[in-house]
Amino acid sequence: MTLLKEIVVMAFDNISANKFRSGLTILGIVIGVVTVVAIASILTGLRDNLVRMVEDYGTNNIYAFHLTTGVRVGPRSREELARKRLTLADAEALKAASAVEDVASELFLNWDIDKTISYNGKSYKEGNLSGVTANYARVMNISLREGRFISETDDMHRRNVLVIGVNVAEAVFPNYAQIAGRKVLMGGQVYEIIGVLEKRKNTLFGESEEDDALFVPLKTAMKMSPQSEFLMHVIRARSGMLAEALDQSEQILRRQRNVRFDQPNDFHLSTADKIVEQFDSITRVLGLVAVAISSIGLIVGGVGVMNIMLVSVTERTREIGVRMAVGARRSDIVIQFLFEAMTLTFIGGVIGIVFALLLSVIIRLALPTLPSSIPLWAVVSGLGVSIAVGLVFGVWPARKAANLDPIEALRYE
Image 1: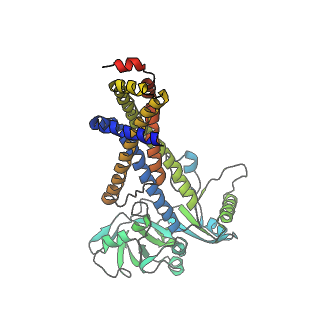
Image 2: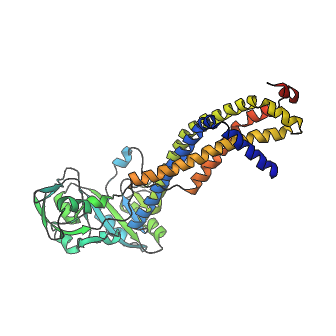
Image 3: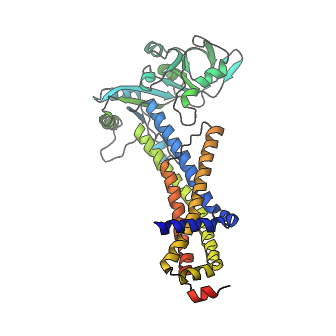
């Protein structure tokens, strides 16, 4: 233990004797560690936000759509785009499942529908217009800031009523204490605002699609746009029966859509767990990219460490000869130089971690909507990799030092 302590102290003394050179040497290590830890912190923060967000919408919910939903990458295939749409008859069939508590539906209106709402000279064009059933708020855990949600009566009589999101309310009614009950113009028709949604606490980037929501009764939406067909069903499973509800929903939809036993599903069922799994599959790819980028810095840093250690061996040849003359074994020389290389890269790793922590704080201050949370495994991995780089790239200089001839080393000037 005493010998190890002496070796570490000697390593720090040699590094501190050449501060500028040592600083330049570990720059690549610092960059590599900062890259890995910073990207890990952002991806971890995003994942945590995503988990909280999907849980906020309901952990017992199953989302049924004819296209793949959730986190996805790349264009859709022709087969997927050619799938027939879900229908209200599918929703009625799903309600009969024993593990299903309720089914709500949402109709996404075509983009060519005029969704601009106007009131007293102010207008909003960026709303997400869709038609929903009366039970949609309950199934999706929606809260209202004021007013009420769409009722069965509204839907039955195809009333021109609107429930709007917070962004819409702030843009069109910036100075109004009471919004519910006011009438706006949309698509040449007068609509009464009956409710304003409460902003969700858990979002991915500080915003959600509901912030720009323009909800109308489902049958009103069908009257507005008979050609709109993109219908999504939100299936609420009974408590503790999510797996059973998922299996039953799949079998019912396959039967409804006449899918043969040897054919794959021509629809997609997604749950909170599946959405998180999809996100994890994407972040694994991004993680590999981050590792590849950081590897360049680590390799550059490792080559720099090897170079400075080789120079150090040359500069300290006489010192090595003296140590051997007084009884130092070759293994002692190897350990000394290896520890010096690992100490050098460890310092680089610590500096990289500190910079990553500072960067994480700056990100949170400058971009509050971009979550960042440095996980412990990223810190440990960063330090471990930095030490490993010193070990790998310090082997050659350490062996070169240990293989010096003691007599020749003592004569070295």
